[in-house]
Image (cartoon, rainbow, N blue to C red; front, side, top):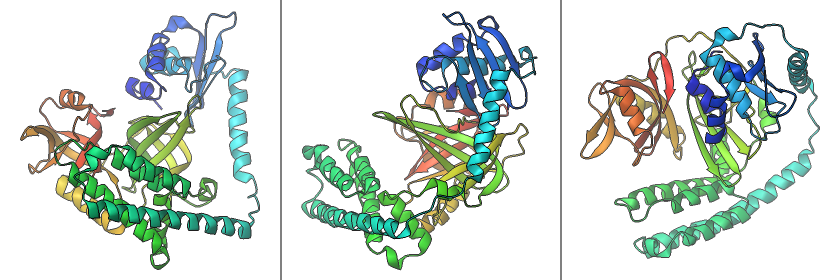
Length: 433
């Protein structure tokens, strides 16, 4: 796959790696370099006597380097891929060195062994006992949460700004103790609402109602259809075994990465990649959780096109998925998105009817123009309908620069009544915003 510079830089773990990698994207930095259909490799002269051996698996976009850096990809991987993006004609050597072929061979062998490995026996009785104990703990926590919520509404919300974030942190910690981290996260989102901003009451009540819906739904889960029951379990924080999920058949399609979102918290980074299936017309969210110093299982960047099999997590409105297998492809067929906001909102309404506490929804929408309305920035479709951008949208000026007053095809994520552009289709490429 041919990466654009923006796509390469989006793979870097931090700004320092982007800067250092850009400095290494020069032919003079590399003692040797080569490429074939499977891999990209090069030797970069560092401070030591031996050059660093850098290699990239082009089938699964994985990196390896002999340098001591704990970042993945390191600056050498970024520099090598960036050099190939800028000057692909320099990579004329296709004879794979032993150190590259050995690594690629081991990766392929490991993938085959993992696929053929017999499933480990499961003690179903012990598993059911642990599951029952956890559900009982969650139900006790929910009883306390519902009492807390009723007291909050009964006493009124106008005094909330005076209570400060500690008021909600306490109940959030209680949900962690009750083994319901999903509810704890929902409560943390409550504490992040600016209680001194105009209209905070509406946003607070909407999030509070979503939490109440999840909590009450979990209490009555046995009377709910199985897929929605899975959604409720996920919402409270009961995870699904990804290894078991990978045993299921998925959807094979040409998947376009339409956007990425990174969120750093303590020692963890959450990598959210939004995908669109060009044949199926389905959207997918691939979540990866990165511990500082470790790499991604799949390095995805905006605009990347993959031939991949995705398996969706069980849901009444499937969105989150994992990648079972993938390889990059070059040719991109035409992309069909929504013609405007009315069509997009109807799609969202249909999904919301199946999963009423769904928070985010991606979409590709054609011909949207950034405009100002009553002092706020919005996206206007061809029928002059408007959707608001989030307050303080960080990529506003990049969006305005790409648009220049003209409409663009955009990939967006809608959350509540706001839409956040992820990328723009500009000069036949998806540009990350």
